[in-house]
Length: 156
Image (tube, rainbow, N blue to C red; front, side):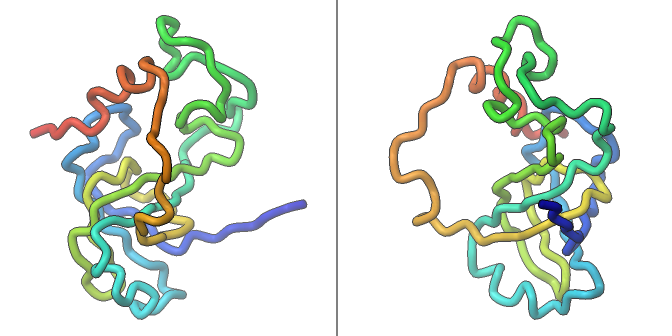
């Protein structure tokens, strides 16, 4: 089966290069593609957060991982399957992040904490509804927490 997706929007922000950390205070504008009217975003600003699904468009096809690897190629971390981590070199190059909604202006959604660089294609926007979040306590290995300690750090 072949699945074809088209971007619904694109990211505008100051992050031009792929980096692993310091995404905490990145403000991004998600601007809808011209084929979508601003009505597509009506009332999104009544939610505090949105889940943004995007495409890692700069990942080289030759760097796609399908088995296991050390996260961030750090050999001090355990070798784990590509589906047991959130790395960008995934088979379908799809990323997902929960962001804080700051405001909506016409066909633009202003968000904070989107870990996608300028020009990234957006595949979908979904409001975060708490009833869709985990209903049980979340647990994860310590290496994952250690890896993420600087991810959302706010830089100046």
